[in-house]
Length: 509
Length: 129
Image 1 (cartoon, rainbow over the protein chains, first blue to last red):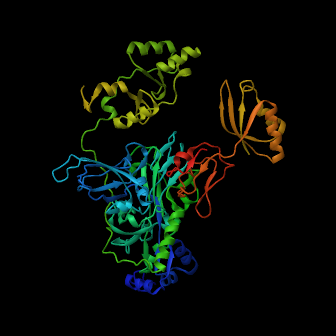
Image 2 (image 1 turned 90 degrees about the vertical axis):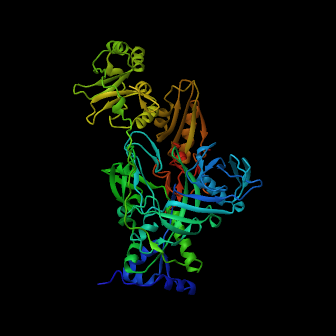
Image 3 (image 1 turned 90 degrees about the horizontal axis):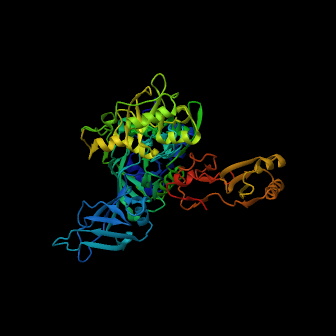
């Protein structure tokens, strides 16, 4: 029986080999092949370091900037780079530009991620700032052009990067959804996923035996460091994250790319590679994990709930996701990634080259990443208005066999705009508005079932008003029947109810 | 081969495409259609060899339809492309796919110009010429 924990080599021994030039480095893909052909023990004895890589959209990224002082100087209280707001709750000329900060002139097509890419590529960027003026910093306005070389510091500090794994997405609704998981076609039309799977750094050391505080890494084409666990680090459920930093001035726009997800917003594609020193058999084993051993959930983004409450449609391996089609029931659904496997592979190869050529030494982690902890949701502790609070419970309804004339009379007499149509069991089967009645006149129809709108947009009693208002705006309608889980009508909510009953969030009735 | 067929007001109501299919015995795939009382525009893909395509195009011309050859459906800026794959699964025809080395391959023949990839691309590498 082999001892999985028996120490095979120390990090300082590996570094000696790197300096001597006889270190054995494989990319994670090569390690998988070696283990398949020669077995785990041989591979673990032979290989000193396995390199990993990932290149994906990482919104929790950004850069600390120091602009230097102008003369006369300014205590910048508001600041923009190419019209993208920079966080200015710091000292006079320090700022933080977040990747998902949105341009005030170009909207979500251009944001912090793009500015970071522009800076890294050496492009000129317009700096604009305002202040109230102080005795020591009298200037109140500044506008100039800068490049990365003009900055004293440009330090990439990303609070959450490099997810260990990431849930995949699909869409059961009947419309296209534009999400941070990309374009999701209706009726389970496709599946999108993120993460490099078998090349993904944290997947290759899931016990955090070698990756920890202070680990030197490939970051955006330069050298970076892990400064701790990332925000939302959730190791107990297998969704660890990293906080990383590195000097932006060393980085390259090949590995830092501004991007924008349609109708979602800007972000930054970040390239990260982490070396895994093969200190024991257990680490060798996890470093050789394959796509078919790494599992994630496919979640339904049609349900507008928080990420962990979106229904799980299926649990799949990265192998299945990467194959290009996933079976949902007996339906074959196209799947594709949002992070670049090609770039992930390239990063693992670049890092391998750096180590083999003696340009990159490994570091002993100062402390391991936390292995305990789970994600907490944000509870809403104040009372929030729900549909049930303001909907009308006294709903005037009609039957499909009713004639158009009586329906028109009802609408006029009761002063309503929406007439839900129900079957004998009280279940919603259609809706009639004055627009539908116009149709009846135009086409000379007499029964409601001939003219009613059958595809009814509805709401549930416990949904928040916010979500339902957005739904009404999306479908360009002014009212929704409120139904129970059996699709029986229990109320109706109209824009009229909302404007009459809510004033500044306060219920006046 | 992809062509754009422009129907004038005089011929817009005639079943020309169906007649051409019957006479030439060649399948024609309609990729995009915009037809109203004034005018019609179809983008079609004709699946046949060169001679047959010539014959088909002539049949359209004889019937009074203007024929424009369609050079390019999408333009992809390969310098911008990061090979993420965000365009691959939304593509309904498999015109955008991964190659062996995980870079992206575009097959113009399969593209029906639905444009879903244009907005799906997070780095805006895809445009309509």
